[in-house]
Image 1 (cartoon, rainbow, N blue to C red):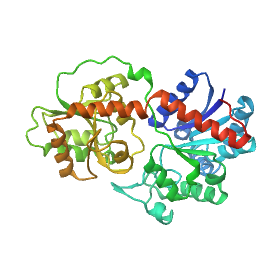
Image 2: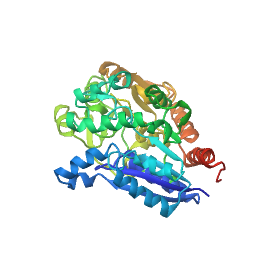
Image 3: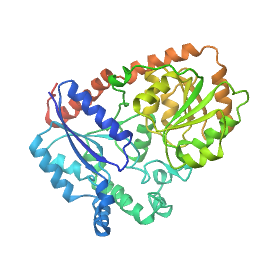
Image 4: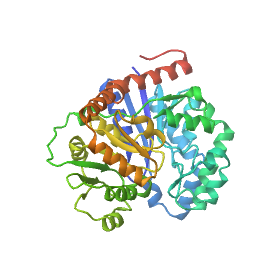
Length: 400
């Protein structure tokens, strides 16, 4: 059986990437594979002094310290394949060189656009920006794209440019995993080898699917996520208040974030309910009772787990017609699209969705799509196929 070493750099706040690492590790272990995790946490940066933070910025380009740490772990565990989820900023691309030195194939999941865009989001302010993709990364420094700081943006630009020159992205990674066809096209446009990119979506663990549901005796549309500008939360508030005859349907908002206090103060209504943070079990329960999940993001989402979770309980999705979401949600089949960043069209789409007559058919299509693409069984088959392919390419034989 395959021995897999997962590599992950945790951010200071727990997020979707961390959840995917946990779920994929549990999935592989449940099928008998031996899995070890090499992880570091960005809390080290928060706790470090000024001198250490400067060193961290330099090490983000290529960390010799992490090269030695990863090499030691590889020598101890002797994996057949290394699966990197996030190397930024502490681990750095040096992880690829440690694996290459020991002739171990590397799989890299592309959770965001960090290899192309220093902000990792293709977002400048509240607008889509592809200047670095289509031109020079100097644009990101001029616009202070990472944490609104030119000084902090420079090391990331250096990491991208220098590793491009070294041939790291092209030669040291055996296979990339893109979550959607849209994401794959963006990375190919940026210069990653198309033949090395395989599409594999995230999935939902069976344990979460099996949770018991409690009926909520209200009609509502649900938003789940970070209450921030890129998630389109204010657009949603404005659109909702522009929908006529909505007294019998509520808008439930689950989540927290920098925009919560402002939007909850500005957009007060008896039909809008801010529910704050909820547990994963509570979120799935609210999803199962919702008429629709709504995702009004104004940026290129990767593969929002909220959509996968909604699909798992048969809840259709209303979403911005932008990036991967246009691909994940089929308009008129598993939900409805509205024009990106268009408040009036969002309001029209919500109204249309509430008036549709064949609603049950849409729910059935959502269930079908989930079981076709986002289950544990499907994901395990896809993931082990990728592992076996890179092992065979590197060493000339498959493990399972």
